[in-house]
Length: 387
Image (cartoon, rainbow, N blue to C red; front, side, top):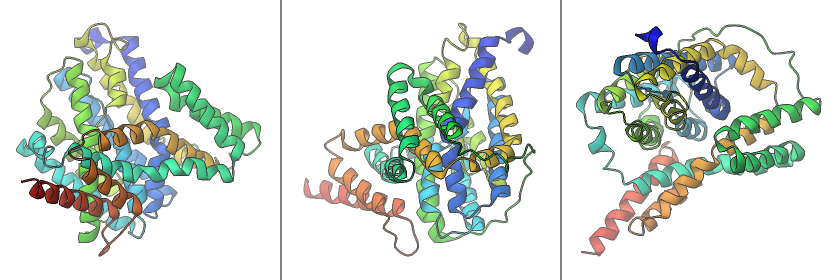
């Protein structure tokens, strides 16, 4: 059956999905790892663990359900970690990953996914995420102070690509940045090594402030910005794949691989659309091959994690910061729109945005948690006053 359904278009779709996913956000994953104090070996282990987890879930779920189930790491989650892990040890960060994955597993096994996503209004969840991501947008322009020409070329490339080829915008931005660095003679490949990544075990430490301040926001961001859109992509493409087993499988893979650096494995949205459309295969029942192909390419990319780490380290920091920020512009815009779209939630959502973006921290708990608390409290007061 598998050999009979093989098609070049589906395999290419799987490859493009992985390439877009890695190129557009691996820089953000590196920033998250660096925020926790990870060295290059641990960073490579993160990519290996994520690659293995995404490979297993993509291949297994796509094969079982005969649907292109594409999983990914949480890019917004990585951005949250990059802004929230400062001051934590890598062991405490690992404890956060395990805590979040365990909650996700409970949600998946209990079938509570749809009900729990209604507890936090979408405008507040979007506002929290926007507040987290704003710093990455600011980094695009602050990096211009050190690399004006390089970052300007990347920004212009982004605008042109969004106008003429939006699907591959970040790939083209990456290419423009690489070419600019090469022609400027700024690329030093002496430290790049072609080696396989090796897993690095980190014994977790569980800190209550870290779990509340980072773990809970990570869970909410992953559910709201990854799993819900991921389910929507499958439904829009005509696949009635049950949701709870998908949440259970991705959470379980995260839980098992968290000590090696898998911070969040979840349903993909943007890259899932690449594998579930007509471009993958004219017949929907044969597009699952794209999911299996994506899993194989994820595994190869994970095994090459050590090489990816040293390669990115060879580029100027300004280029990496600009790439991460440009990759998140559409996400920032979408969440800002959702923050203010509904007048009923607007004030509470803006309060959530401001508190989160401020970086305010109490009792060692990060601002994302307090932003959400402030927004929920403001909403509750508004509703009481209107009765």
